Image (cartoon, rainbow over all chains, first blue to last red; front, top):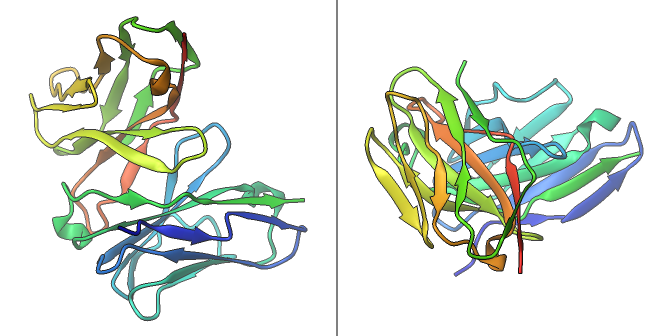
Length: 118
Length: 113
């Protein structure tokens, strides 16, 4: 069956440009997560949605980062006025259950979008 | 805060060698513990998990035991194959509104034929 998909797979932006990264979760999955993975590091949590509600955005590094999931399925991570330190792979994950009951629920990851800011 | 510390890589082994990748964690309460694997050119995949103390997770010949007394979750395999070459991430997930995953920095494993 279809897994989590992300687009674009690669994005090159000039410093100061805005970018939008898309995530299509597995159909029917309630929870959606965004992570940022810097080169040579493990993924770091950015934000969490339960359906359309953004319940945790504690990991967003600055107010230049904004995420939405307006209809409770597809999500978009937007980065305004990109900086070189934003260069990373952005991973999206989804899971079937809500976060509060999802301690053992598997998170399925997409292939990621590699963002390079020049 | 919660954190995961794992063995730094890269680790290079010959085929059929024994593997151990060390992982220790710091967390309040009783988190669930995971090993994720990232094969070249592919996304993160769950390899195995354990949800309470003394649980053993296993998959594809890999095993890890949740040791509360030493706060560890070491990954082991008795005989590695070339196809096991990948980056391995130890991770934890604690009960919270988001149940977000906290990852270690990853260990790159290369297996020589």
